[in-house]
Length: 365
Ligand code: F6P
Image (cartoon, rainbow, N blue to C red; front, side):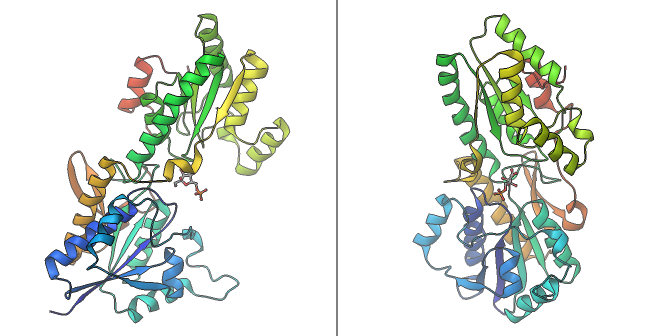
């Protein structure tokens, strides 16, 4: 049987578990076909590397190297954000990106392409699949917002990091009797903020999916202070907006923020609590720390499960799918069904209800 040639790229924001997933695909591949029966080509910096034919064979016989991948954060292939909406646009460099990617795929003699990415990357994976390439997707992102999958690798590690940050914030907030606003990544989807806020014992959680009301949030903060609460922790998802801001266009929002002298929601909440509620307030932004470092044991397990299923899809030549998890079961979804959709927090999500039941405010009631 001819050697199987598998191209692998990681695209979009990195997260813990990318390397562990690649390792699982490779181990399963070598076990099935033997070291001479399968070849892995690493494509550098996501779709950019596919456009420009920047790649290298990955050594599959190096067991020590492969073991290191299990624990290594980031992505050893490098990654880049290549906006999907520009994929079919010829820009100043004059390159037809889709044609170039098809050419690289065929020049390398690939049998298939593995795309480890988030929502945008899955849109491009679907585009390439529709253009005739054999594509298998793998859902990564700390945002956990891939449609059709209960969980993505990277999320659990980020949750652990965010929770540890909150645990530490509690003690200093308490000593100084302050409010501390903790900003958690998540522009459109608030899963990470929601879970971190509950796990880390926050008092309020603001999400992009549940617009907050400034007066209600202030009322909540004042009430806590009046009731003798020594301090408050407010978790703010990066993309959270109030009920007036959600009605604004991007430019209008920028202008409103400029006029108010705040750069983002975190700054706005700090200002509001200090100036309108008279509560001394600080902010903390773990930012990219949430995406850094070694994957948690749970993410290593998920990465391994996902990598093995991706290889099974390749083995049975079932292309045009992305791997997913529903309940305890690993499944696959058609790229064309999931591309362009997002999994967002619903107002009646179980965890939102749980949070409300223990008195966590979403600033909306
Ligand atoms: O998509 C993952 C994510 O971490 C988002 O939560 C965040 O808004 C964004 O990436 C940050 O992107 P960048 O690393 O390009 O600043």
